[in-house]
Structures are given as C-alpha cells and as structure tokens.
Amino acid sequence: ASIRKIGVSQFAENDLFSNIESLIIQLGVKECLIQAEGKTADYDISKLRQVLERCNTVITERKSSEFSTKDIEQDLTRLLNGDQPIVGLPAFDSRIAMSAASGLVRYLDLMRDPSNFGHYTLEQYDLGQYMRLDASAVQALSLLPGPKDGGNKNTSLLGLLNKCKTGQGSRLIGQWLKQPLTNLHEIKKRQTLVELFVNDITCRQGLQEQYLRYMPDMHRICKRFHKKTATLEDVIRVYQAAIRIPDLIEQLEGLETQELAQSTLVKELYIDPLRKFDNDISKFREMVEQTIDLEQLKNHQYVIKPEYDERLQMLYNKISQLTESLDEEHEEVGRDLGLECDKKLHLENNPTYGYCLRVSKADSKLIERKSAYTELSTQKSGVFFTTKTLKRHSIEYAETREQYQRTQSSLVAEVVAIA
Image (cartoon, rainbow, N blue to C red; front, top):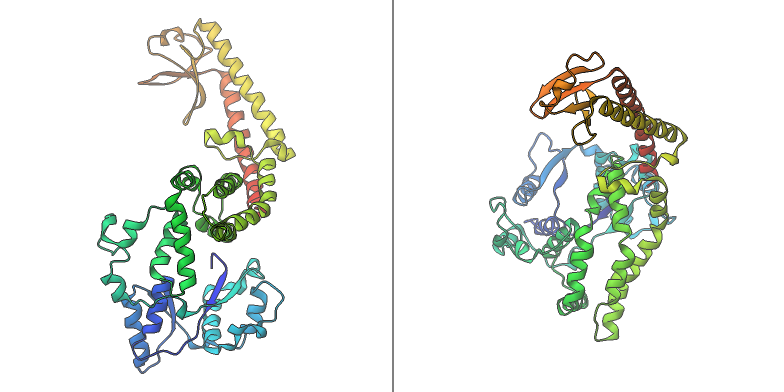
C-alpha cells in the first residue's frame, strides 16, 4: 500500500502449491489473506496453510463475501490513475485475480481514504519471468539469513554480497536473489552494468561515499507521507537527497564506458530517470527553501522561517526582544556583583526554573543578604538564583515560546501536506 501498487497474477496450480510458493518467495510476501474455512475442513486450504507457514508468511482469514467481485470494477476505477477503462485492462479478465484484489481492497480499507483515489497502478505479475525457488531451495542455498543467524553476515549469500549504503539498496539486492532472472537479454544487461561499476573504481567509490551514504530510506519516508505521519525532519531529509541529484547525475555521466551500447544503457536506466526526477522535484526544493529555516539545520533544529507567516513573525520578534531583555538583566547583575558575564556569572535556561543565573559556590557569598536576589538552589555546578525582573522575563519568554511552537506545529502540518 505504501507504493500504491496492486499486483495481480493468475496461473494454474498443482497439488503441491509449488507455483504459489515460488510467488511468495519471489515477492517476499509477509502476509496472505485466505478465505475462512467453513464447518468442514478444506484439504486444499490445509495444504496452502502448510506452504504459507513454511515460508514464514502471516495468515489472515477473511469472510468469503469479502472476495466478491461485485464492486471491484467501480473500486478500481476510482483507485487507479489514468483514463483507460478498467474493463480494457488485460488483468481485469482474470476473474480469480480480481476476486483476490477485491479482498485486498476491503482488507486495507482503501476506499475510505479519498487520498488513495487516482494514485494506484494495477500490474500483472508474470510468474515465469524469474527462476522458481521454493522455501527449501532458499534455505539449502543459504540465500537469505535465517532467524537464528543473528548479526553474522557470513551465514548467507545476501550477507556476503550486501555492501549497499542505503536501506532500499539492501532490499533490492535481496529481491534480486529471490528473483533470479531467466531472460538472457535482461541477464546480460544487468551483468554489463555491474561490470562497468566494477571496472571504474573511482566512479563507484564516489557514488558510494559522496552520494549514496547520505540518501535516506525513501521507501519508509514515502510510507509516512502516505499515512500523513511525516514530520518536518522527513521533508528536510528528502530535500537534502534532492539537492544532491544534479551532482549524482554528473558523476554517472563520468562513468567509463567502452561501447556506445554501454553508454546508452547507463543513460536509459540511470541518467534519464534521475533527470526526470530532478525536474519533477524542483518545485519541492523551492518550497523547502522558501518555508524552512535551513540555517538552523546545523543546530539539528527543524523550524519554519518566521517570515513565512505573519503570526510567527510577530512571536519571533517578541522572543528576540525578550532574549535581549534577558541579556540586559544578565549584564546588569554582573555589574552589580562585579562579576564577568559568561565566565563568573552564567545565564542559563534551567528545565526547572527557566532562565536563571548561576555563580560558583565560592562567589555565592556576593548574593547573600541582598534582597534583590532570590536563591533557587545549590547544586554541584554552583548556586542558582534570580531577580524579579529576570523571573518576569523568563516566564514571558516561556509562554511566548510555547505559543510559537503551537503556531509552528500547525504550519508544519501545512508544509508536510503540500510536500
């Protein structure tokens, strides 16, 4: 659901359910919906359960009525993007596949959220495009780490081959191992690309160290955007990846190739899609630069620019004035006590007392018997105290800061929704 794609497949099955087992292995299926058994046990469903359990797939039983195809045409018409009629799609003729799709749509409750409409694609999955592997073959070949392997990477082929810098890269190489190609043309194409990167060490290491290691897990971030749980930090992480794309394209263009066919392949699979992505995301970059205070990133703070909103600007100005007032009171007390600010007399924002002053225990005798100063506490780091003026400014600062955060939170929701 996070990538908004519905895949369907329909094929003849044998008594051992070996085709469905291969499909589960190839796609890395985590959960499977099946019709709930009636009063009498169904032999085929029992066999299917055994296959699913062998593949460590979660089984979820649903009512038989949820697999009805009565509403699937109108449901897919609303969910799928594009103007092509659903009845014209080849996958629509696969009635059993459409029954399964109907159960999936109901289980995920896709029709309840209007943001799903017009954003899904329907793809027909060809079981024969990859070598068929069952759970026993995967285990015997040690393709993937087992549940008892822990963090030992040397116990599986995936662990030995996985040198990826990104989460999506690690998942892709795992997918390739579960989906061995059978088409000779596709095999040679993949081998050509691997050979190019193996031979050009400079380009490969540059991509890994300068670009890929800074790429966030886009699949998981996209999932948060779809679920409307993304934060300003997620927006920034996508932005930081997006601004690296032009240089990433330039790095790929410098990849050493010996033949025109190799250059064409790199352009077709990497450079052209990245250029399209760079063009599509340009408005997003502009929006981030106009709304988010990028200067605050070095302090690990994700905040909206005050000038983006009039209310925010007013509160920001007030906070700045209060900060100046706090500094002035700090300096005034320093002159009164004869202590150098920031060396002997410290202004601190304490989690318990708010803004207050701190002196060493040796200097604390200077504030004794002075009614202008109120001692708050004595700790290992020194003596904390305040003044009436400092306390008033501190309370006002805390209240204004809270108003600022509330106002910014509503604006953050707007920015994330636009993103």
